[in-house]
Length: 321
Image 1 (cartoon, rainbow, N blue to C red):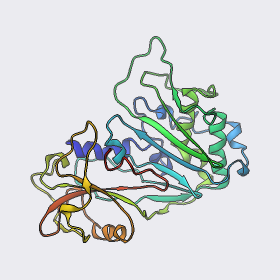
Image 2: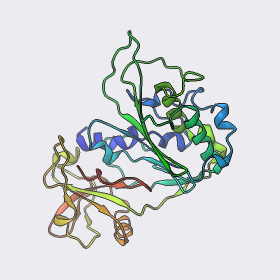
Image 3: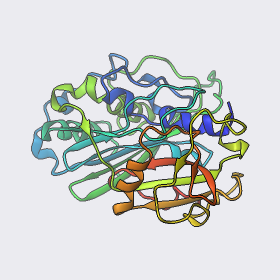
Image 4: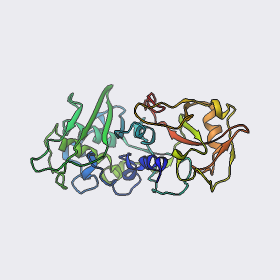
């Protein structure tokens, strides 16, 4: 599996909430991730404080959760889950594959009731995560062994106009069971919160509406030379027919040169933030295309990757830094 296939897999591996929201079990644990116990019975039953919370406990929750790997390109491929304006928006769970797959996966949206939003806020409060601290890392047991790899989960919560940015990690072996009543303000409490949020269907199923398509208004579009080996195992022969580039801007000048500190990217890969009418034009023009599809404007041929930008998500690092 070449680099593009590995990075594309991060859409699944680094998104904490997609599997839980789609109604399946919580995602498999990643070393160092607070989702180590997600999906267990202890993590999917909210404590009394959350279950009995009044909808008045929050007025318009904003929640964004994502996982960040040491490789900065992970930010590009790790699409976050977002709760905003009473809607839960996320990418549906995707299968990992070494074969050409759809170039674009439509995100979905589900309503989340005021009671469901209040339960999330109440759990964050009960777990001691809204008191000012921003990092919740574990203290390893003397006999713990360090783990290799993994990603650090992050949450941004905006509650009644106040923003709380929190993260937690534990790159050591830990017991597999979740504490029934974790000590507030600890990594175990952060892990408890992450486990609940990664399985919202199991925890707050009755407070969630049915899935409906969510049409994004902002995209990050990355183009790369069609013959570049970085883009995957299809650099020599493409099994998909070429397509006409649907936008008026020529491929050679579309976007800006990609530059990531410490990460080598093919020259001349380019990236841009796409908004306005071009979003609908591009999405219509790529229907049925695969990620090995060559797009051509008559003078240049390139392959492309498309990354959804969720509501309220910062974009400053999604085209490099």
